[in-house]
Image (cartoon, rainbow, N blue to C red; front, side, top):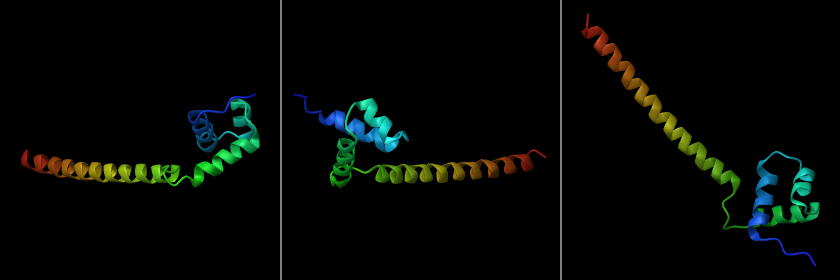
Length: 91
């Protein structure tokens, strides 16, 4: 009788299937599981309300990057103004 896969194994198979860009046929071959099994795990994973979705992770990362981008632009603008100030002063 086959052993029941661990939650970590299931989570890794789902993560690879959703994020790697590999065809699902390749993922099931790599993990040695059935195609319908992987499909069922993915459906269950998407319905899990306690698990953060890949989309929410991406949205959070985009927000952080936008904040960092805004700060870098402000710093750049301050440096530009300081450069102009000191260039005029040295004349």
